[in-house]
Image (tube, rainbow, N blue to C red; front, side):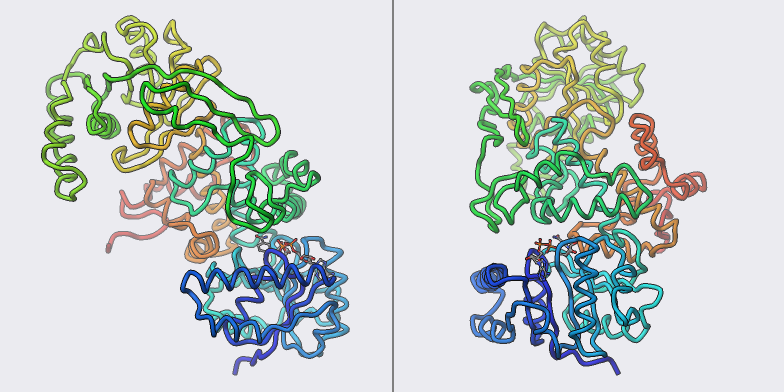
Length: 615
Ligand SMILES: NC(=O)c1ccc[n+]([C@@H]2O[C@H](COP(=O)([O-])OP(=O)(O)OC[C@H]3O[C@@H](n4cnc5c(N)ncnc54)[C@H](O)[C@@H]3O)[C@@H](O)[C@H]2O)c1
C-alpha cells in the first residue's frame, strides 16, 4: 500500500515553489506554504493568485475550484509550521549550504516518518540528505518550470534512499497527473544535463554578438520546433538560478567548459537583471513577474524595412548593453537565379516562384532541368490539393520559372542562390564563374550548411556581396532561413538578404560565419550529449526522450530526432563543430560513431537507436 499524503509542505515560494504549491492544491492535497519573511510570503501568495486567476480566465479551472484550491493552502513564515506534514518539498535558492541548513532544521521540526524532498536542479541530493538524521527518507523531486504545466518530474534517489520512499513518491507523482522518471543522483539529472550546455552556448552567442537575441530565439523555435528560444527560457528560469545551476554542474560534472557560466550571466545577475521575475533579463517585461515582453533599446526597430526594395533597414543589434545600430538599404530584387538540381534547389525555386519572383533555374543539363521542373510541378500540385494555392497561382508560379543549362543566363539576375553539391571545390569554381557572369552589386548566396561562407566568397572579386542563405528542408514548408554574413559581407548585402527572406514569408535570422550557424551549433551538441548519457548507462533512450518532451516541451526526444535526421548526418556535423571549436565536450560520442560504422543510420536504414523495421 502506498503511503497517503494528506498534507505536504513547500519551502520557498519563488519561481518553482509557488507553482509546486499550486500542483498539490489542485490535486486535493493540503499545503503548508512556507517563506522566510512576510513580504516573501506575500509575493508567493500573489504568484499563486495570479497563476490560478490566469487558469480561470483561460477556462482551464472553474472559479469554485480555484477558491477551493486556495482554501487548501495555509501560508506561514518559518519552518516550524511544517511540524505535522507528511512530506516537504524544498524550493529555496540553489545553494548547498542553505539547503543543508534547511534540511537540518526540517529534520528537527518534522515528524520522524515525514519524507524530506528537494527540488534542486543540480546539487547533490546525497550531500543535502546527510545534513539530516534520516538520509534514507530524503529524495529529489525535480519539477519543471512552470510546474503546473510541465508533465515531467524527475525522481532522484540517492544510494541510501529507501525503495519504499521511492515507490511512495512515484505513486504521489501519478496522483498529481505527472509522469516520473526515476534516476540516480548526478549533476543536472537528465533534462538539465542536456539543456544547460545548450543554454550557456546560446548566451555566449548573444554575448559575442554572433547573432541578435531575437534571432537566436527565433532560430531554435522555427528551426527545431521548440516552445521557446534559449534566451527567453533563461529569463523564465531566472538568471540567478541558471547561473547557480551552471556553476554547480561545472564543478560536479567533470569541469566541462561548456557549463562554465558565460561571464555575461554573472554581470546580469549582479546588475539585478534576473529575467521575468525582476522584469528584465535578456528581454524587458511589462513588470516583474509578467510574461509580456515589451520593446527596449535592443529591440529591432524596423524589420518592416525588409519589404522588398523598401525603405532603409534600421535595426539595433542585440544585446545586452552595447546595442549597435546598422543602417543599410536593401537592393531591389525581382529576378533570381537558382543553381542546382537537388532537393534544396527544387524547394528554393518553388519558394521564390510562388512568392512572385522571376526565377532562372540553372542545372547541368536539359535532363536535370526536366527532372527539377517535374519535381516543382509535383510539389505545386500538392499545394493545390491541400488548398494552399489555387490552380491559377500554380500556373503563374510555373510561368515565372525559366529553365537553363548555362550560367550565362544569370547575367541579368538580381540575386543568385547556389544549392549545388556540398563540396568546397565545386562551390568555389561556381562562384568564380558567377563573379564573371553576374552584373555588379548583385547578392551571391550559398545555401551551404557546413562550409565556411568566407571560403566561397573569396573565390570571387566581390566578397562583400556574398552571403549564406541557409534554407531548411523542405524549403517550401520550413519557416526559417539563416542569413550568414562573413567578415567581408556588406551591410547592404545583409539587408537585401533580410528583405528577400521577409518577402518570401520566411523569418531570416542573421548570424556569423561559424560552423553550424545558429541552429546546428546549438542542436547537435545536445543530441551528442544525449548519446553520451545513454552510453554511460545513466538512463534509457525512452526515459531521455520522455524527459525532453515532457520536461522541456520538445516536439521530439533526442533519439527520435537522431533517427529522423540520420546518425551519419549528425556525426558529420558534430565532427565539424569539434574540429572548428576544439572543444573537448564536442567530441562525437563513441556510441554514435559505432552505430554509424555498423550501418545503423536511423529510419533510412530501418535501424538507428530504435528498430524501425516493423513500422
Ligand atoms: N527556476 C527554474 O526553472 C527551476 C526549475 C526546476 C528546479 N529549480 C530549483 O528550484 C529551487 C528554487 O529555484 P527558484 O528558481 O524557484 O528560485 P527563486 O529565487 O525564484 O525562489 C526561491 C525562494 O526561496 C525563498 N527562500 C530563501 N531562503 C529561504 C528560507 N530560508 N526559508 C524559506 N524560503 C526561503 C526566497 O524568498 C524565494 O522566494 C532551486 O533549487 C532550483 O535549482 C528551478
